[in-house]
Length: 245
Image 1 (cartoon, rainbow, N blue to C red):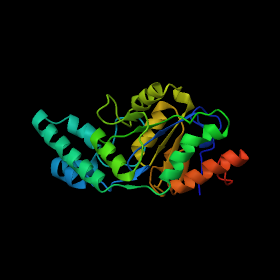
Image 2 (image 1 turned 135 degrees about the horizontal axis):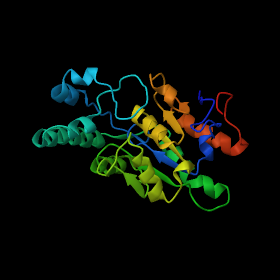
Image 3 (image 1 turned 45 degrees about the vertical axis):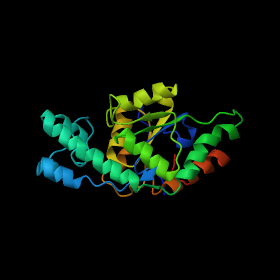
């Protein structure tokens, strides 16, 4: 089941994701599963702070998420910061080594690469990956899962990371599209925050029941459900079910 809010970020109706001119996708949880667990790092280096602090980097009211490790690490003394970042990288690389593709990802990429050709333009729909993970872990996981990465890939080595909206602005610039033509697809709070702060629609996948689900414009239980909705809209010009707008 999918749903959308009654009005878009500008106060008008939310366009269906299939109508977007370009897609910005999160990596882990949307395209691959790496089963990352950062709880030991949060407990070891930040202790009770990890349970008590809210993410106040951007002015959106939500339930308290886990402490954002990249931002928290940036505030530590240099030696300790490098130690924490080394631990984060180790966990990401280990996760990449056991990565598996998310169910439905092959169909999603096929839709992205083929939809415009079906409409007669001969051009695939532009899409990018924007992730908080390190680039090496992304490329390793892609190789293991047989996923061909898009030309535009933004990892945490870039100047900005989600939920900073400038990460999405940069992705749109590198795609050569207007930011307003993009939609953000993710599975976590930071994806939704980035989209809201950038002023573009968001799609949440694989996070049914999350306390911050209401921030998404559309939500789907699985990536496969999302693909089915995209394909259905292509065929009919209408949302798949009455809860989509």
